[in-house]
Figure (cartoon, helix red, strand yellow):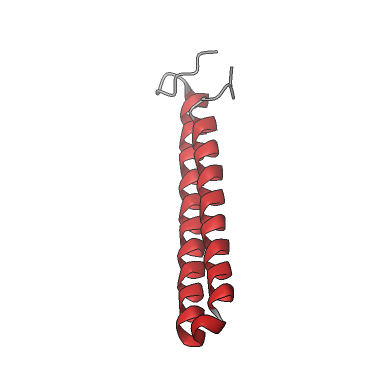
Length: 89
């Protein structure tokens, strides 16, 4: 079966559409969590000064990690929907 995702390949079209949708949701959710983690971390650091900096930095790092992980998952789902990386081959 060809891996083209055009309208002549309904399975490819559906998987591509679903992959793009799930990818967008995952990346958006990750971006929101990442931004929130950075915001809370910066607030903790700002309010507590140097005493709370390690906690603020840790919260920022967690937010960045979640955002990066969600982006990676989103990219993988999108690639799978496009038939890349041997998913359909």
